[in-house]
Amino acid sequence: MDITGSVALVTGSNRGIGRHFVEQLLQRGASKVYATARRPELVDVPGVEVLALDITDPGSVAAAAAAAGDVTLLIDNAGVLSSGSLLTDDLADARRAVDTHLWGTLEMVRAFAPVIERNGGGAIVNVLSALSWFSAPGAGGYAIAKAAEWNMTNAVRLELVGRGVTVQGLHLGAADTDMMAGYDGPMTDPADVVRAALDGVERDATEVLVDDWTRMVKASLAGDPVDFTAQIG
Image (cartoon, rainbow, N blue to C red; front, side, top):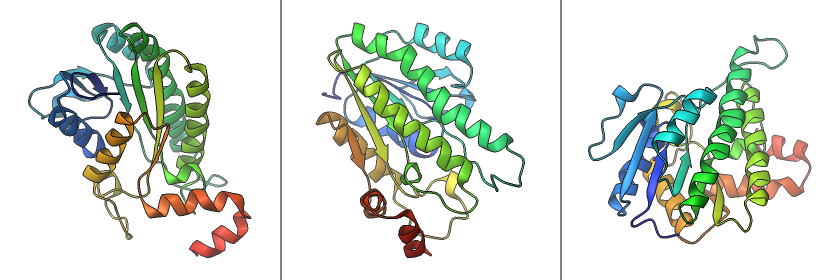
């Protein structure tokens, strides 16, 4: 897919990776970029069309699809963090993570895949995580949500074969964004994350692994998960 001349919609575009998507899409010559957020007043990138969007609200998703009927590239970036024990803590955060990353993203795919197809084809990028493939103490809810979103991404890709819509799963470790404030470990520049994703769009890649950490995690799936857990401490 050629990004030049495309019409893109980015969810969660008011900050972090989403904001970088908006900026780089404009730089690469997208003819229009819809920048969406639950709080659209926080979107501050000039030259975009701003839409209010809560991906967990089917009515909001339907309204966005009706307003943005010329989309050829969908970037499913919106997300929430979840922390705490799956066994002893309140599960509200974990449920919100699944509602957002799995069901909210699927609502977006269901709404916009027909739009993209009608417009002659294009691509969908689902922003996933290395945590699609492992978990860590306190991150169980988020890991469950991302694992489910990963397999949903694989499933809708199969359903869209032959309809001119490429579906990319974008996997990364920690990125240096507000969401990861306080994280004590290596982090990738979000601009590099977006560059890798959009390069992948232009070569019709179905999976993009952004960093060495993510590639190592995926490679570990062939082994015993106990060995991997011991390896990362």
